[in-house]
Image (cartoon, rainbow, N blue to C red; front, side, top):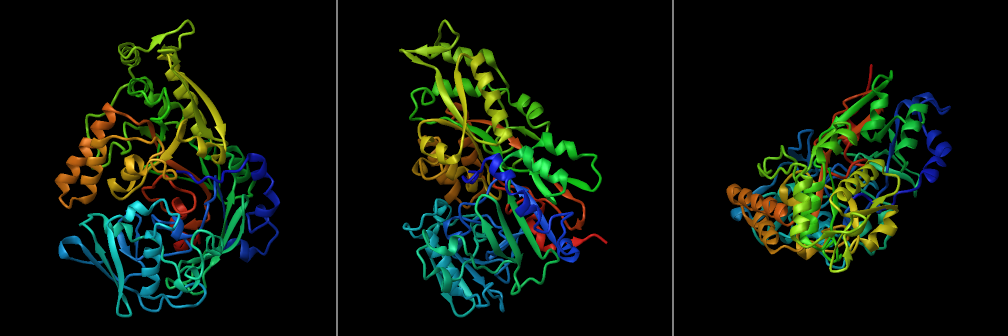
Length: 528
């Protein structure tokens, strides 16, 4: 789920002097310093910078490293480990050898004890990490000698190695604190290419090159992430020269298409927009309502009109080009089918066209986060499609602080999506055991057949068995949707064209701080 601390446009605009003067293009700071700095506008900031609480769990954190990392094509590669793991005992034992000479940003050496501490703390039920279920397979982790770490799994878990991109934290710092309340969340110490130099909540985070980084000195000596919630304000600041780059929605990115000195980067993603349909709500808890909404929504129109073609219709959590996608689950926009489903279930139109059943109007509230124009447009289009079928959807904007307590009973225009393996995104989205666990299973979806498929996909080593499990799951979501899946979204970024080495990866929902063309900012080189 997108991070919660999303600020108003007014607050974002108020940071102009503070961020713009910080080595931004055209500022009066030293030319050499400005040439080595980058200022990027993003929509939101993390709640925490502690991997113990979930930060950077999918890799690409600039402050930390995992045992492994991913390259531009998402292939796993060594990071703090010298090589990919040695796997034994039928896939139940993974052994990693640590790279020699690695130091944390405070100058202290990395040891196997730091790796053991990191994983054991994340797995501790007392740690407030809602991603703990992603490491469910881990039975034990221990140090072996002075350079090895051994993981023992409860069961063979095919994609386990990809989970070891989890950032490693120093025991000598974090171990002296409560992981939930300690200062490590805002004063992190890691082995990554950059260190946090300053964090002004709601305004900006500034990072500087880590003098102890094992991978060499980056050419970009510092970068700032300016927190600007409003899409239009980010675009304006980019055009004025206050920013070197920005995350932008398609309609605003298009306005920079022919602008000299600017370049647009488009990243394919697993990021999708969906409406959560809480089972505890008297209206959205009715399967007929959920199935009717699934038929009534015009996904292609959303791609064409809202995303300006920068995306695809979403018929489930996996995009249509994913190897695990089940062909044949595509559903066309079918208003007649939606009306028949409601008629057959006893939802009859009232004088105002809105249906009712046993005195209950087919009406519910749909929240979207303030300042997010793309979600707002999705929500309004969804409400318009629903009304044609006789369902009233009242669209409201709010901050995440307001939305979060309402997620159990009210619908939310949400964003999800993980890369790497179907288990990574589907389990936390759908498994009934995680209902209400932070932003996991926001719809409180409870379907035994889906739970069984998720468990089978997680525990099997056989690719065919895993594929069959995810096929069953996707078909079950058509018969019993807990979400209305709307679109898969391409991510668009516009940056000043003064660096070489910028590339994009296939991206998850979470982007801005890790994903984006700056996923490898430590490798950028100035244009000659």
